[in-house]
Image 1: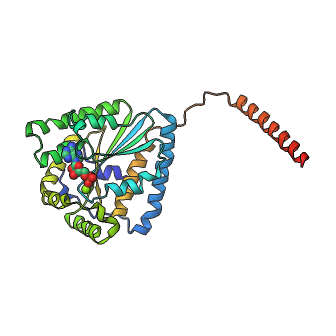
Image 2: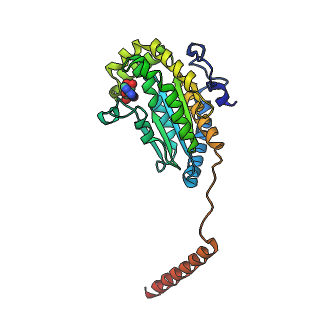
Length: 288
Ligand code: AMP
Ligand code: MG
């Protein structure tokens, strides 16, 4: 099944997250059965990233957005880690630093956008400026409401510069979030992930849903689509995200660049060097 079609937010369409089942797994039955398929997509991503890097003419930007504990870190750890770190990077968007806050809201995103041949993953992104900023009223309505159009123009510019953009919203239920918070409390190796803010943010769930729905409806475009990924099951989330990334990269027309060297001449040089090496080895063997 083409998961891109299934989970893509149609440009211009309204989004109702309550209509999308976060526990959806389709015909996929279990983590065990999905594992080989996920591995296959991760391998495809790795091969295609090699071509993207070698080709050096295009780039890929993956935007990950979600409420706390929905699995942004998990996607990076399990899927993106399959690609070569040379040519792949992740940037985490936190509260803007003094320097970042002194610029327009897109400045820090533009600074980290991928160059030719690169894959960049945004863990949170410029979308925080119409999400957390809107929910917490950090700027006036008149300011954030104009940002959707600015975001569309910004992304269009990146696309015109040969960047492919994929935007994922990892969709979990409030019950699943609470369960994951519990795991973070119970498992000492995960304690560091807890913050008090997690609970106050959770109280604002309906406001975040509203902000996400608007953001996706206003900025899912043909050139930079949003995908809503059912993420209550981590394995299904990994399957869907890896398949969508691999299928998208597959269609980027990536290929190895032509060589600019004379392979026949290089081969002659190689044989000459090899023969010389043999002679030296033969000579030193005779000395023993
Ligand atoms: P985490 O992703 O859990 O490390 O947390 C990062 C925090 O930074 C989240 O609470 C975000 O909402 C917050 N954040 C990211 N971008 C912005 C922004 N533009 N303005 C305010 N807070 C932000
Ligand atoms: Mg957090």
